Length: 249
Image 1 (tube, rainbow, N blue to C red):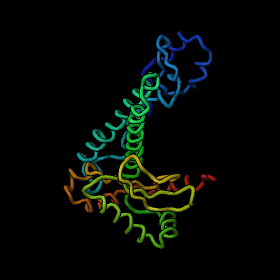
Image 2: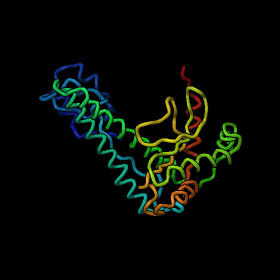
Image 3: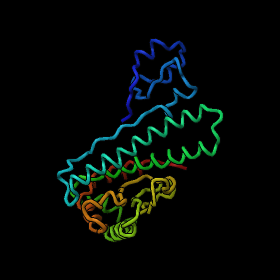
Image 4: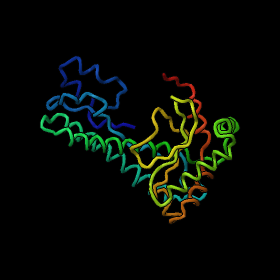
């Protein structure tokens, strides 16, 4: 959830421009700078909203084959670290944009970091939220996977094979629904920066070593097995149901 370290009362007391009041809704969580040093872009949510780590949606002591120690380390160090880095990058982007002397190539270095940190935050949140379940897919989702891949087993085989291929390296395996093609497909993601266009993630598996090394060392396929035992399929089914209701040109 975004944070709001500045006081709305102070902002309203000092602000003289009516337009500034329109920029923030009553339930806004945007970071509100003081009027004394108000940059041009300071009222833009794209720059001012700060992010906070979302709590784990499951009890980390209850996973089957994935230890509490690993999950807490993953959440505290990798995911929360990405959240902090994203906030830092956004602050520096705002400062660089206000500085007329910032070269475009320097600004684009920051934008690359913005893309990478955003991808890490979003994919980690999707990953954690599709964990904590029984690992048993419901009939509706099984049917959707069968329709797309010929059988649930065929989908399962490909998803696991992609994960095995990423073992010892880095990346993500994503079951995604492509809004442009209308297809449900498995995707290989090498990093946080790249993902298929117009695709909504349905099931996300982290294959960076930090997701399994503490428990399984280099045995990445054992982690993949453990991941499947803990999938929260209700979350994946809800994501697919929402995705299929979206229409794009």
